[in-house]
Length: 252
Image (cartoon, rainbow, N blue to C red; front, top):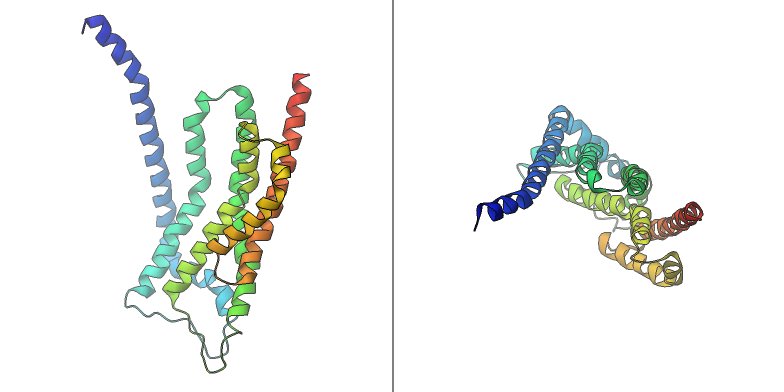
């Protein structure tokens, strides 16, 4: 290989190396952000768990309480919850790092749409978590704590409760991103508004199927996830139609 060929190969590989170095820097910054938030919240980990467990504790019968069936549970359950909460709190910074990494490769019209979608994705994720905590949890815990036999005392393990609510938090947080995903699919040309409208019956069935897999095996929690998913899909279709009309008006 000649010196000229070697130089050409180095010039071609250099941008890739720079991108990888920048990606590593962005990832490390995101990890540091999560650790910083965790360090600030760790002291209040027990208080945080107390707050998150309020929807269940409010529905427990008189004389009943939550329990810990493992020796390490009183420490590990609040610890794990604080880690997840730190990740949730740091999501805006993490998405900002992702945006800073990909934005140089976007055109101006792409940036104009990407920024609102980025902000909307953060808002919708938090909205999904809030909907789960303030609406879904009181309803399903009220149902679960009253349908059992009278001879059974409800005393939920704190680790099992944590696993249960984190699953629902993620399910509702991700499900509320449907409008953003719908707009991206239409905007990228993967599908069209008309095609999505024609597939509406399949989407409704799909929402209930997803709700069946992501939520506990009861009709209430499945419906509380499936119905908002369908409404969010409709809002995504509506926004996609508005964006399409705006783009067509600008072209004309």
